[in-house]
Amino acid sequence: MPTVKRHSHPITPNKTAKASIQGSPDTPDLFSEPPAAQGMMQGRQRQVSFAMPPELLARVDETARKLSLTRAGFMKLALTRAVEAEKAQGR
Image (tube, rainbow, N blue to C red):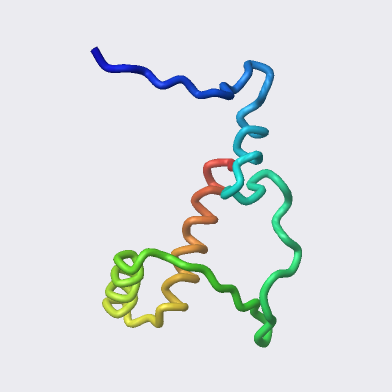
């Protein structure tokens, strides 16, 4: 019969999921307002930087090439579509 390991500090019923997630040391504050201005301005656009798995980056580059777009152009297009889809869903 398998053993079940119990957490030494279980989440109490009065602790919300939001508080639990925010309390995680490796999770950014997902519930606050987005930062007003992060990244350097380049013309009328703000430069941002983030990491992604190499496999995803290879797929991004391949798709961008097929669409005759730059990596940045494809990522802007994909992010615009994702944001608009979320907006259409009322989120």
